[in-house]
Structure formats: C-alpha cells, structure tokens
Figure 1 (cartoon, rainbow, N blue to C red):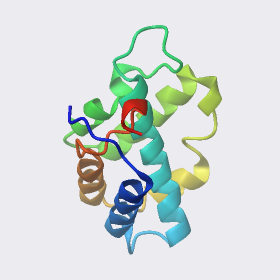
Figure 2 (cartoon, one colour):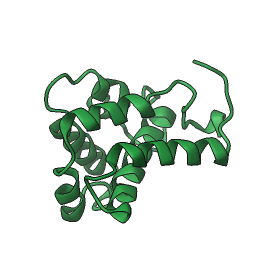
Figure 3 (cartoon, rainbow, N blue to C red):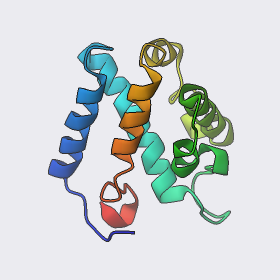
Length: 133
C-alpha cells in the first residue's frame, strides 16, 4: 500500500473526476448521491475490510471493494448486494446505503461507466482508511 495522506483537495479532485464519469446519466444532485454512497462503501472497505472481529463495522468479504472489482459481468447487482449485506450486518446503515431513489438513479448508469468509475476510485493513492486521512 502506498503511504500517502489524503487532503481535502485530493478528495475534491476525486469527487469531480467521479462526477465526470456520470455526467449525462443523472442530474448533479443524483450524481452526488451515487458518488457519496460509493465513497462510503470504499471507506468502509478501506478502514474495516479484512479486519478482526472486534472492528466497529462488519464488512463481509463479498461486500469489500476488492471483491467488487473482481466482478466481470453484473457489477450493478454486486454493488446492490454489497449495500444490502452491509446494511443487514450493520444496523447503523439500515436504509441509508440503498434506498428506492438511489436504486432508480443507479439503474440509469451504464455498466461500463460504472466499472470505469470503480477503477478510478480504486486508485491506490485514494485509500480512505483512517491512516490516510
């Protein structure tokens, strides 16, 4: 892992780049809604994925970021599944990660665009674990 500290400028750059991927699919507010949920998923995976039982949140292997990147076909289904799994294992997130309005917006994004966005967010310099913030 690259040891790098993220600052607000770098996070904003990633937010803008992510919004560019979604331009034309959704309005700006809905773009932000999708991107922030992906950021939360990435943050949970970076901070709590592959961790001991004593960690604050339970992020099962199939919901971790790296597992999602391995998906070759139905990335939308895998992301939906990851959000639902995290919500079911962590009551704190119940009804937050995957809502009907999110699902409606999410389904308008092309699969290839979504895959490109996930690859962009997978940048090793964009690790959202506490040690990098």
